[in-house]
Image (cartoon, rainbow, N blue to C red):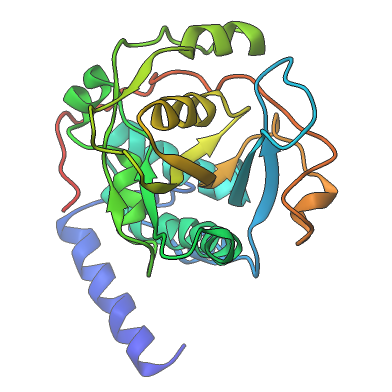
Length: 269
């Protein structure tokens, strides 16, 4: 460790005495994110890729391309859980850098395909009203602030009804639960070209519902980028820098807003 690192560690030791904290990744004492967990948040060289489909959708060109940075397990899962459930703001920066890999790869692949003169914009998956009231922020917005250079932001999606908690629902039930739950704000998305942004994708129902709503509002949705995928979204050959159409596709639902913060309203900025 160099002199700068030693000074930083000494400062952190002093702060830990005044403000006791546990690592958001492993629970170790005296660090917001300990050295071991920081080391586990390695930036991948390239994002993985999938094609998302609704249950029962036929093969063809109607799937939604998804770029993701990491699997939803281990240290990334624990830190994201702490961010969403306990308001652990220290996790937004390292996780946002991971999300930035997926966003950058998605932009690189999509922009050459846009119509002449069109501009790609990012659109964050909305939080339900109840989740935003409890948290005081949208976790995906918080991650995207740390994701590095990216296209201009667009807004214009909202929940028209709050879906049921999907933790115990099967894939088809989750899709039915989310169907029609999101709408575009009148006129806001007309003619815009969008990259959807989410934190965790299980089987893609939330992103597919967002695409439906955005396209109903007059937008063109070119793909999606996420921090992580769960085990239900399986790897395919297409993620290894192949074309946008995967030979294996998955659909279903991710689970509605079910995380509940323990620390009340927290603002990340």
